[in-house]
Length: 103
Length: 159
Image (cartoon, rainbow over all chains, first blue to last red; front, side, top):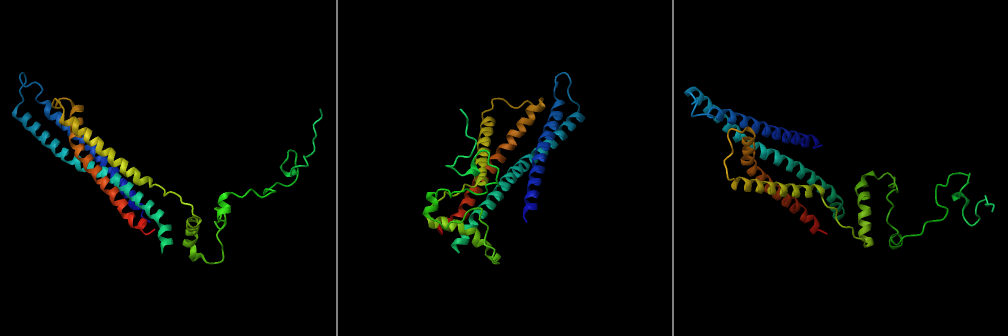
């Protein structure tokens, strides 16, 4: 009856963990490309256009980093929620004979 | 020394080597009664079919009957542990432990992450962003475990 909700929760959890991993990967890549301009500043100083490009990449990297924590928390909380639902179902199943006999 | 090939007259021939009759489907002699059976003979066997006298509405009562009779017999069975609640608690504690470890590694790092190393940058992002998420989720899991146990407490108190 409620199984499709559990499946939906599992799919959401997997999607959020994949999104978290993708965000970390993209943010690290953008940050690396932004820093690469300044590898040899003494001998090869970056032009203004390169600095602007580096700033843009850094901002995008920071923006992606903002996504990492909510996605990571969402995936972890989703995993815990699945366990909680299963634990509650177990509890209700175990308590059913007791409550029936008490009534 | 010749071996006697006939059945031993002291025992039932159905359970001896060389018996060629119909299959024995029940023990010839009744099994010795166990202390459990002698203490309370009213407990129904697990394989005993439910009485089919048309009262299918009493299905719950049929399920309850063995537990009630075991209580009347004086035998107490320990409550079964909820494996999912245990997994919830252990998972939450593991998240908190990993979060604390990551926090410790970030706080005690002696150098800044190298911006020119892509792997080091990715690990740095993971450390900084995953630490609070792990701690928050772990604490939330512990709270959920406590709430799960609190929801069951009144049911135990009724006994």
